[in-house]
Length: 298
Image 1 (cartoon, helix red, strand yellow):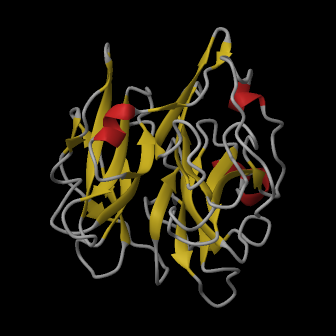
Image 2 (cartoon, rainbow, N blue to C red):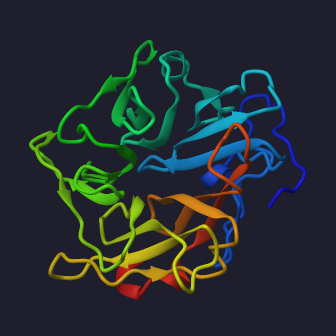
Image 3 (cartoon, rainbow, N blue to C red):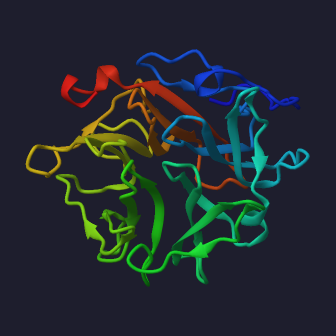
């Protein structure tokens, strides 16, 4: 995983074309935009890559121990203009309001970024939102109930209809996946998603909510410390028995932060050799989903 590489200093635009001009992957996961987004050197961390519904905005987390100019750590964003993709830019309003943000997810219209951050003790995290304004991105605001609670909330994702999926410890001492439907321009309640699986968290929902990926700690038959699983929404609204996505996606490392592309063609996820961005390395990967989904869900 730790191949020598570096993020170069690009004049704008630094890439052109869909998905930052990258050659689409096949059924075997590969690093996304190496040298542009993913810096594959040791002790550099990129994670949580997510696109807007139209595919023209991409945001992600970057941290670095190499202290590159303007790359101390935070949420970065790049946008596809008539001239091409802009160079990734740190969202200062989020970084300046510590503690650090984690697990960012773009709203479908790219006008909001949702994320979690620690509140008080490390065991307490809540959800926040920063909105696009005429003067840049707003100071983050806590979302409050039902998306935040006295428990631990982490890593949210959002469907095309703005319904939210997230991990929470609000009912158990272990993270489970929860769902908050978006009704009348707000989230009125949160309910647990029950899966035939002993562990579940870190969800990534398809734009139309037809399937979901999530991560789980190593189970018998798994490949590493944490693997990515797939579950399909059934006609009655329940979810199919989760299936490990196998060795072309999972590895001996840690796979986490899965996201589905707006066209449902690709899975984006993070592969790291540990959990601490101050000590470990991480890169964003992508893989074609066609071979992993039944035709009815593609």
